[in-house]
Amino acid sequence: MTRILVAGAAGEVGRAVVSSLLDRAAEVRVLVHSTPVDGGERVRGDLGDPGSIARALIDCEAACFITPHHADEERLGRNFVDACEAARLRRLVYVSAYHPLSRSRVVQRLLDTLIGFVGPHYRAKLRVERRVRGTTLSPVALCPTNFYQNDELALPEILAGLYPNPMGDKAVSRVDTRDIGDAAARALLDDVEEGAYPVVGPQPWTSDQTAAAWSEALGTPVSYAGDDIERWRRSVGARMPAAKATDFAKTYRVIQRFGIPASARAIARTTALLGRPPRDFKSYVREQVERLQHARAS
Ligand SMILES: NC(=O)c1ccc[n+]([C@@H]2O[C@H](COP(=O)([O-])OP(=O)(O)OC[C@H]3O[C@@H](n4cnc5c(N)ncnc54)[C@H](OP(=O)(O)O)[C@@H]3O)[C@@H](O)[C@H]2O)c1
Image (tube, rainbow, N blue to C red; front, side, top):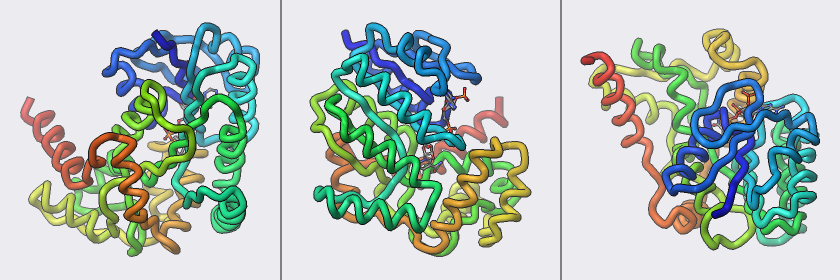
């Protein structure tokens, strides 16, 4: 059986990847940094310490690298890819963030330059992605849009009637992190062609529509709190690590300006990769409300 190392396993995406792999009875090893991780064989390591990555990769045939919110993201990513090359893995899967994809290397370079200009905090992700795709490790890059699960941190505000995430009024194609986990499991366990894949939900959402979806599921009014990103940052406070909040604030600025409208082709490629349509936002919201009602009742 293939042993798979998952780095970044304690994060939102990493937990979903580990869960999808374990559901498929895969042999999973997780790189544990500072946050405990449930499931899989645990090996301590630090992406800043190449020796610890090399030790974690012993006897692994494949790896999934979920790039962290980190000031030194590019160096940590390069350390991981170098170690994977030295370990001669059969497959390397990289999970970063959504961006337009082209089959042409020249066009991709131009697109990446443009994205780095619009959102400088995406540059490290794009550079690591280029490094990953330049390996001979049958690389697969997964590029997910904004997560449905970002709303879970905002549940206290949503239940009080305000949708606080400053997403603006442009269309944003969001995605369920469980679909990212399933897509990674497909790329790690099945015969998926190497390359870069978008991972997107089935339809775009504006902030007002998002608030309305929560309102409908809860049966109480929920309205959008507005576009003030600094207000959001103050309200989220210590509930989110500072580096992550900084990245989120930058991303909200980009989203408010441009939205993230996934193309029909991106939705079709996600569907083909998953082997089924991606999960829809309203079902996710209903599940969350049922979970809350169940927790209140018990
Ligand atoms: N939120 C969104 O809507 C969205 C959308 C698209 C893409 N993304 C991107 O998706 C990626 C994953 O997101 P996420 O929320 O799951 O990430 P995250 O919360 O930043 O989690 C990253 C993981 O990396 C680990 N890590 C950090 N520094 C490490 C180090 N030096 N050595 C070893 N492990 C280290 C963390 O473990 P410890 O906690 O133990 O340090 C954690 O498990 C991010 O790059 C994010 O930008 C996010």
